[in-house]
Length: 109
Image (spheres, rainbow, N blue to C red):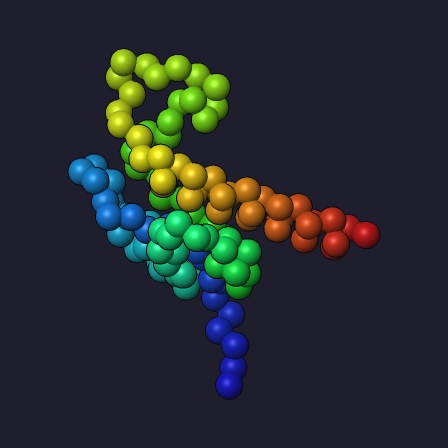
């Protein structure tokens, strides 16, 4: 059996609120030649396991992030936020960042 050379890219997928169209990300990744691994939101995330085979991570954006997470107050025009989504995607991003730094350190030594 031959290994598929296309990169596997993890994509967080949410039920899209008005204005957020995650299918655009899927189509763009596919057109670029990537295979997509959908990450289903779950409270008990094992990000290391989820991202182990992925060559990259796409956080699809959408609703506003809670401004308190980056030390700011909510602006009157800030839309609602989704606390579970914020925490879920932060954990994915933190683990992916750690994985990339570990990989870079291993290849530079």
